Image (tube, rainbow, N blue to C red):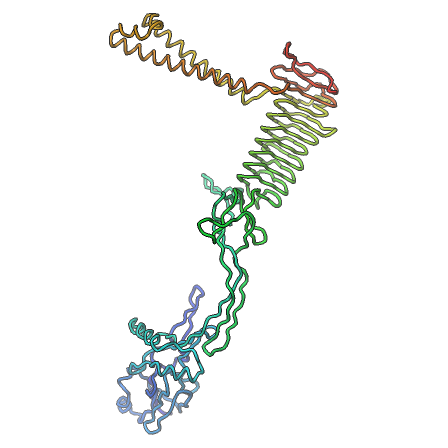
Length: 574
């Protein structure tokens, strides 16, 4: 065994070590700063004696780091030469010394990026503080057949910045090819969130999972998407001059769909051309005037609220709500749900309720049948088959159009007409049908009459006060009468006269409003209840202010109010 003086850390088997953190990330760091050598520097030497004192005299103190080891021999590897005269192992170039399997060699500090488009030199000052010069780098690159070196100026500037940072180790870019440009087709990025909500937090802390805002409403001229222009592919090359082929990347983002137009401010921004909702179909973003629900309204869609028309291709499931500023179209049925429309409601199948089903339309309602439903429409109600146990208010007419169409149970009110083949049942199921009444206007008129009554009472109270405290002459010529009153009485009288004037003004206004309501209550046609089949006994008929309960069935009949006697009459429908 012989003793060797090593001026490097022999345990280092590579320039870098990889350490895995607790979070799974891998950190790469320099294994040791003591193993970098410049050309001609001593890496190791054979000790000329076994004496520690003698060996200490042979150590190069200027190197700062050394270790003494016992080994049989050290073989020479790449980048290392042995001086037999001095018994020293010397560096033939700049590199990182390692001792592996008794062989001493220098690792090249040259490293490459992915696809070898960039080449770097890993540098730590040698034992005497020297670093590779640009000429040294040029020789290394030429030996490696690298043809795209950086400029001397760029290399020197990088070195200067590295020394200024006072780091013991740094990496310098020494050669650079050209990155390939990976092209892609034009695509569009959304400028609003397309994600559904998990639900709506209620005041008591619970979450309503039916409120997930599945309909994304947008307004005309609202920014929807941004265009990302296409990029053409261009091949690059690595530091050896070899081609690095460009690839066409798969499309990112979305395609542009319907009703999106360029913004006047920025042609790459596309805005909605109309009020509507976002539709994403086959990776294409569109703005549609109609909210199309493909399938049922259920937990997948949540409740629907839209400022246009809603079209449901399935059914509206129990407990859910659909609100639309315009029409609601349902291809299936409505099952104990609620529907509110600013326009019409159309249900291809039926409406089946228990307790909570409710349909409100400013326009008309059309359905195959209605069962246990609460309905209110500003227009007509038209049903194909039957209306059973429903409460309906229509400010036009209610008609069951089928040949065997029937109305059974419930309370129905229409302004002009109620029609069905059959009304009621032979066993006298409680059924009430009313025409010629407008509950909203009747309430409005009643409220107005109450207001008029209150103001009239106020006028009477003020008049009585004036008569008690002042002479009736105050009503004949108020101005002259006030002149003869003492100041205190004059003030009281003036206040009462002002209150009287204001009350009379209000009374005049209310009378005009009452007249206007009464004019709106005038019917455009005589209301009637009609049946082409049978109206059974027990049915309660109301026409305008007249009421009649049928004592026996009547067929093919039209019920109306006699304009003179104010009683319900009937005639043959045909």
